[in-house]
Length: 121
Image (cartoon, rainbow, N blue to C red):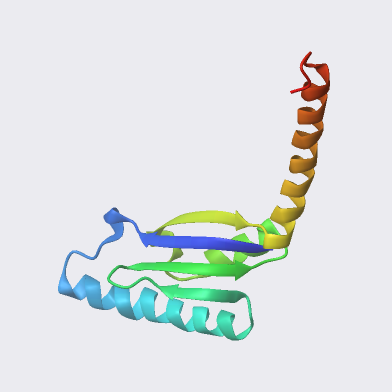
């Protein structure tokens, strides 16, 4: 299953001094980028990357379970300082299949309503 993951630096986690900024980059950002690069090579990250102009990541992640997804996200060194949003994704075929069943039910209801109206509408 695929998930859209958005990680954004928490406002309370912003480095306040140049020294804090350097430590943050060396200990959190660079290691996270390396792990993400490796996960992309392993096809765990299907797409995405750092968000331009922000301390944030937007990723499409492949995971077989919620636990696998959780393990992947929490393995990122920057994760404790981020606000994380997870959106499960479906496939285009699965959505079409779901809507096809819904469409058939609506058409059946329309036929039942038309048959019960005196003028046949």
